[in-house]
Image (cartoon, rainbow, N blue to C red; front, side):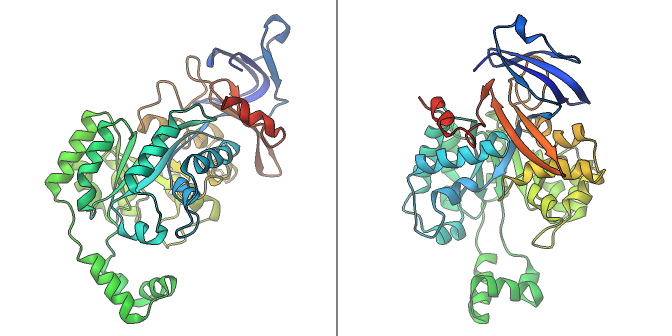
Amino acid sequence: MKNLIINNASIVTPNEVIHNGSLLVENGTITFISRKPFNSELYPFDCIEAGGKYLLPGIIDLHTDAIEVEICPRPAADFPIEVAFRELEKRMCGTGITTVFHSMHLGSREYEKDFRSKYSRPEVFAKVHEACHKHSLINNKIHLRYEIAGLNEYELCFELVKKGSISFFSFMDHTPPEDLLHGEKFEKFRIRKRLSREQAIHEITERMQRPKITKQQMLDLINFLKDHHIPVASHDDRTAAVVEENHGMGITMAEFPISSEAAQKATELGMDTVGGAANVLRGGSNLGNINVQDSVSKGHINILCSDYYPPALLHSIFILYRNNILPLHESARLTSLNPARAAFIDARKGSIETGKDADMILVDYKNNKPVIEKTIVGGNISGEYSLKPAKIYEYYN
């Protein structure tokens, strides 16, 4: 379905909510937005009667680790990559995500050890990239998460970019902090890893002593990514000084700043700051880091991503609205227009405006619980599979 009328919806635009509004989609593009209903009999289009439900821009998720877990949900329990990709896509569609950047690790010994996958990293990237470019329910892209201690994988970053596989890039540094060697954090680490005290000290110390790529190598890679118009983020920045250094090298986005001072500094420098939607839904961090709701209220977080729980994004929009932290149209921007701008795709994605792709979600908001009724991607109604399973398959044929 490429041509469509949506009548009597509460349309969430970037600047306001238009109640009892209507919208026209032609050839997958939004061509007209009205403050009153269309006479659908005048158009040879299918018509959705929204009944006052919210019509929001489709959710854009810049960072979700879900694809890795879908491929290998238990250590050494690998599934065919295309099957995992398609099954995950269906669930993401059902949570209102219309564009996803599958975040995939490279250079991390810990991930390799935990997953014990039979697939090599180049093989995973190649197969996911191939699946992204087949006909699909939503828009799929790859976010490469590069661990800077992965010296052997450094050149592979350049190769993957040259192949056109990468749409987003972030630098990871999971070197343990000094305070992890003692106190409560140490005990939590030891228990979680099921290690003796001596084993835990050895593992932490070994990770702290690992060599990393040089600052010049990092700068060379950043400049290469910028030349290829790929947005670049840092990850888990602990201090304002780290943020300032990253910004000086050309990084434009801070993902999951750990401290309030780091988030504030990134904002002051004009960087995009990304927080986890699970933090909003749960009411705080499970690791004792910043409270994202508080950071949003201070203007220190302007983008939300799912990280490890895709359903949290939709709920977060309405939690921020319900708690009077942001008006609904501003809350929705954290999961749509703001990430679209950060990822350089806002010319066509991220908002309900004329001339943009018809990527939208129809949401029934009752009893303080948002429920997806339809997910619309490029004018195609892709989110009816919960009621009509056969619907999903016509888009693969």
